[in-house]
Every structure is written in structure tokens, then in C-alpha cells.
Image (cartoon, rainbow, N blue to C red):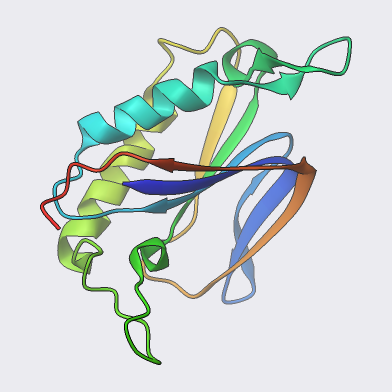
Length: 155
């Protein structure tokens, strides 16, 4: 599982001209799935998202977690995070096949939307649409961006 995580002041997803997801302050998570990934792997990422002290405190320092300050998480399926460039055309053979990735992505979103055990305040979870051509817009706050990877895949 790979994720590009950006602290945002706002982010949204539009599919075929219709807004399908939108958050204010929070985290935009571009999520790539690989063979071997599970909901348990996503739980590790969720815990990290909630407890990372990456939001500004009263002094303006990154010292507050999303679970404390509240906000949103917008998770967007991003199979291209497993793309390789062995030739002039990218290969996505390391990504989880779509017929397996779709139900896993949907299970992750469901899990995150109901996961209140870590958050001390309301955290809204929104999601992009698996398999859709999406327009993702964001206002990166900082800019602050991380790469997270948990590799349990056999590839």
C-alpha cells in the first residue's frame, strides 16, 4: 500500500462535471493498492493519519493531530502510484487488479468512515470514485506532503 498524503485547506473530487467529494482543512490521501494489501494494512495508515502531529498548534508549529483538531480526510484511489517506467509506456502490473482493488477500496472507505476509536473530534471521510476519471483539486496547506508505504505485497 502506498499513499501520497497532503495537508490541505480544501480538496475536492469532480466526476463527469459533478462534485462527488469535498473537504475543508484536513488530509488528501492518494491511495495505491497492491497485491497483499488488506483492510488491516489500511488500519495502520488510518491510525497514522489520525495521530500524526502535522497540523499547526497555537504557536504555528506542526504539533497537533487530526484526531485532536478535527477536519476531513479525502481518500482517492490512485493505482498509478504503482506505475513503473521500464519503457516509454508506464506499466501498472504491480498494482492490485481492479476487480480485487475496488471492493478493498470500498471496504477501506467504509471502515475509515466509521472509525471513531482514535479521533477525539469529528473527522469527516470523503472518497473519490474507484475507476472513474476524476478531477482532483486541492489547496495544499504549507505545502506539506508525505509519502507513506507499507509493503506486504509479494511483488
